[in-house]
Amino acid sequence: MKRYAQQTRLLVAVDCIIFGFDGQEIKLLLIQRGFEPCKGKWSLVGGFVQEEESAEDAAARVLKNLSGLDGIYMEQLHTFSAPDRDSVERTISVAYTALIDIKRYRQLHEDFHAVWFPINHHPELIFDHDAMVNQAKERLRYKAALHPLLLELLPPKFTLPQLQQLYESVYNTTFDKGNFSRKILSTGLLVRLADKDKLSSRKGAFYYKVDKKKYNVNLHSFLNFVPDAHLKKSASGR
Image (tube, rainbow, N blue to C red):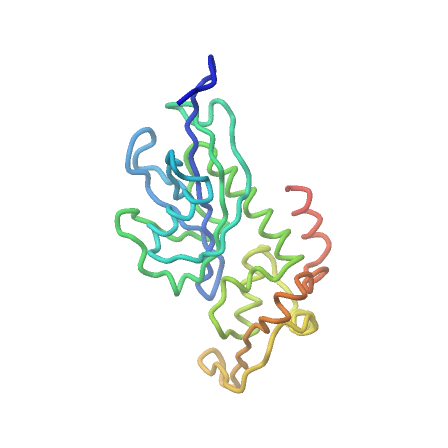
């Protein structure tokens, strides 16, 4: 097979920033690197793109090997290509973000030695992985204000307090309970169910589910749901 003459060969990797919700807060999935350099230090889940793969296929493979499941919400974040980002060889990394419901993916592959950390309190990461996580957090905050993608993190039925905890964890702030409920219900994306969660309070909180038809048709229902200050801050960090 012909090759381009006098061109440097580069390695291409994928790194996955995996966010999950445990019912209380957003968390980030990290592993302890199993080989040099930086063996034993904390890292994102990733791997090298194989010759027959696209970057998307490689990221899907990494997530499948970790969780054993397909169909995880995933999107490309950014390509990190600083010449000195990897201390061994010139390696370009295509970063992907994934959103999962932690309760559905408890059985993570043991070979990864994966640990969930709070999104705003995690150990220092290798290479430029901290920069990847910071950019992913800003993108998540920005997109969550425009689109209800955080619902990907919730179980099939959930309460408004659970949903509020999710948003407060993402934005690292506190929302007024009454205003949150009013604004979230005004989107028309949620359907109230007959049963209640009575474990959290004596009165109980109604369960809700997502109206899938409205979710797919009205993708911008959450526009202006998050205060402008948070949205503008996130937008500037894209």
